[in-house]
Every structure is written in C-alpha cells, then in structure tokens.
Length: 353
Image (cartoon, rainbow, N blue to C red):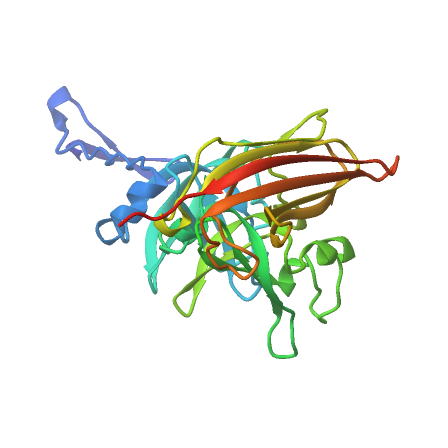
C-alpha cells in the first residue's frame, strides 16, 4: 500500500495519521502461487522441469532414515502411483517411521540421477498405514525402472555370499519363473542377518536363506554396476514363499488333459494338494520307471492346494523326448508315518515342421 498522512508519535514510537479514505492506496495484491500437488510418479517423470521447485505430495514411509546407511540420512516415500522417492536430510530425523502416512511439502532435487525431496516439512496424517508396494517378476524388476520404489519379489535362492572384512553385507541371488535373476543385498547396518562385526544375529533367517529355498522379499529397488538388487530393511521383509491355498486337504494330483510341446516353449499346468505335517515328493518318471526330474521335495507343516507348471525338462534342464510320462505324488504324514500317493499321466507331443 501507499499511505499519506500526518506524522505523529505515541509513547516514543512513530505513527502516521491518514485523514481521508483516498490517503490509502492499494498498489498490488501479491497472492502466493499454489504449491503443485503431484503424485510421486509425476514428480519422477518431470524431474528436470520440477528440479528446484516446491511441491506437496502425500505418501507412506516405506523405510525410515538410517537403515541402510548412517553416513547420509535418507528415508523412502511411496504412494499409489507405483513409484517411490527419497527424502533426504542433512540430519537424522527419528520422527519418520515406517507406516507413517504423511503430507510433505519439499523442494524437488536430483542428485546424481537420484530423485529426492529436500528442505521439507511434514504433516503426519496417520500411523501404521498399509505399506504400498509393487508386485513384480524379476524380469520386470531388471528393467531398473523401480529404483527407490518398495517392491515385492519372489524367487528360488541359487547363490549366496556372506560378508567379508571388505564387504559389509550378504548377497542372496534368486531366480523366478520369468528366468530373471536378481540379488537381495542385506546390509549389516540393518541387523537383519549379520551385525557390523559380521556375526550372525538371526539363525532362523540364516537357515531359511539357503540355496534351493523359495522366498518372498520386500525391499527398495536398487542397482549396483548396472545390475538390479533389492534392499530389505527388516527381517520380516523376508519370508518363505508358500504357494497355494491353505486349508484341510488330502493327497491329490491333477494334470490338464492335453499334450504339450516343450520345444515350442509350451508348459503343462497341474495342481496338487497335501495334508498337514507332511513330507511331499512330486517327481516325474518315464513309463519304464526311470527318474526324470523332481518338481517338489519339501516338508510342509500346513495343508496346501497348489498350482504349478512343468516345462518338460529333466533334472539336467534338458527337454525330454516326446512320449508319455508319469507324474508321481508321494506324501508321508510325519506324525502317523503313513504314506499316500497319486499318479497322473502327462503327454509330451512331437514338434511338427
């Protein structure tokens, strides 16, 4: 405003006394520009244009600060757009906890390709909110489009390397039905499996993370030397993968009743079930009784009904010749010592030119 009036003072402080309405003139109204309210996917898609701008976004904390590293302070935020982003601070912020549903107003930053929110203020909307995640197969995950995003993967452990004096973490390699392979990187700083002295903290998890075990893992998408890796933050982010439907089932085996040609990349679907507390062996033989491959051989404490596929390969990963084969299910009740079986034929067809 611009004001005209008589100079005056009151208790030693100056004041001005306008006499008429037109002694006060409004020069300009400067309304603050509204802060853009964006999804995390939109922020990441437009990071170059938004770099340096202040935005507001709602989301849920998937991993709080000082879990993976303590030399820098990073938390991870995700919303229903299926993307995550880093919250960076120069100081640790213990107020940020997993499951906090927040509204954050922050400056968008990109540091060496990493999308970040800095200089932030947070309003907590709720606590113990459901953690958003993206369910992927490993081939999708290997596109590296899910960095800083909380994802869910499953796979069979095919390799494991433990911490060394120069490597403060364990690497667990898994592969799923897509054929993709990725690494579960378990930093010692998380205290999930090892501590900072390379001592095992969790013997139960250690026994689970053995070659041949099927596991599910939740964690932050990451990469190292151009290869994907997933970073779990807590021990509960890793569990055994139990495929199928839990219930009260008997021993049974069914195969879809048609031939398939593995040389064309075809597979055959089958279903099987088993009771509680049983050792389950599911194997394939030819008609002469010669062993071909093992599809499942594990103990299960819970009764399950499961669906699966066979790709027509033997235990050497070779496509077997055309013909009739027998899928043989053997279930041994550990408490009663009783064994039940079921057998179903499967036909591998001929590749026609």
